[in-house]
Every structure is written in structure tokens, then in C-alpha cells.
Length: 181
Ligand SMILES: Cc1cc2nc3c(=O)[nH]c(=O)nc-3n(C[C@H](O)[C@H](O)[C@H](O)COP(=O)(O)O)c2cc1C
Image 1 (spheres, rainbow, N blue to C red):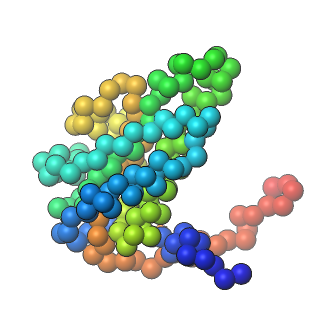
Image 2: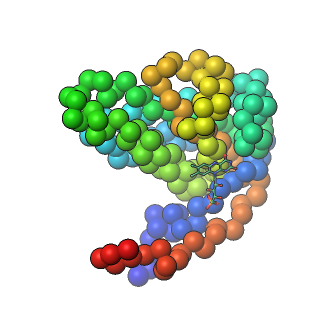
């Protein structure tokens, strides 16, 4: 099979941690967020919210307080992907129990869509972990005035890549199991 553009985009996506000092345009940001919001979600509840961080002082504070976000520079923007856990209060008890924890998967699917869109557009991105590490969740909560029903899952940095690492070959047949593990 000849891979099409979408498959090639998936196979060549890499984490980018060095960004040029060149702004991400509003148009590009809109496409990134549209891609993120196109993700599947449990019961189509779309529990995600996105906090776009462009303010240089805030970015600097995030850089100081988040140990794995030291690659923040002037060129990149931050997108904090959050989940609204209060959505599940409005559905019946059985569904609530079944769905409460799905916000992580839903928001992860949105995050991956954003990473793939960035790569397809010639931008670069890195997912930096926030949830479930309480100290990081609390830090972002206070820096960005995040209410208690909203949980920040990650901080994605997006920018124009200063260097594009080679994609890692992750194909591993030993990870595939047929009919039983
Ligand atoms: C849940 C999660 C948390 C991650 N946290 C960080 C992080 O804090 N800092 C970082 O530089 N990269 C982080 N990454 C990116 C991974 O290091 C990266 O995806 C992995 O090394 C594979 O490289 P690739 O994305 O280029 O294929 C994270 C990725 C995921 C999915």
C-alpha cells in the first residue's frame, strides 16, 4: 500500500523542543484548535477546554515552575488542554460512573490531533505532562486562574521548528497479539 498524506503525517510526526523566534499566526492557531476539537470523546461530551498562553510574563512563569517545560521561548505559544469534570454531574448515575474518568482519554485524543495538525502545517509541538502530578496541576491552576471543575491535562508548546528531529521507528511486532495476549 502506498501511504497517503495523512498516514505519512502520522508516521513522521516528532516531538519538537526547539522553536524559532517567529510567531504562530492566528489562522494557524485556529486550525490547530479545530483539529483538537474534532477528536472523538465519550458520549460526545467534548469535555475539553484550551487555554492559549501567549503572554510572555506568564510563559516565563510556566518555564520557571514546570520542570519539563524549560524549552519555552519567545517563539512558541502554550496550549493547556483541560478537561471539565463537572460535565459528568448532569448524566445519570450509571453513566456517570462509567464516564467520569474518560475526560483523560478524550483530552488526550484532542491533544494528539493538535500535535498531528501542527506537524501537517509545518509547525512543531511538544506535549509536556501536567495531570496527574498534583504540584503541576496546582501550579497551573494558580497561574492561569483555572476553576476547580477544570483539570489541566497537559501543556502543549507549539511553534515554528528550529530543528526537526528524525522520526523514531517505533514499529514493533512483539507488541501485537492475535486472539490472546
Ligand atoms: C503523557 C505525555 C507526557 C509527556 N511529557 C513530556 C514532558 O514533560 N517533557 C517533554 O519534553 N516531553 C514530554 N512528552 C513527549 C515525549 O517525550 C515524546 O512523545 C516521546 O519521547 C516520543 O518522541 P516523539 O514524540 O518524537 O515520537 C510527553 C508525552 C506524553 C504522551
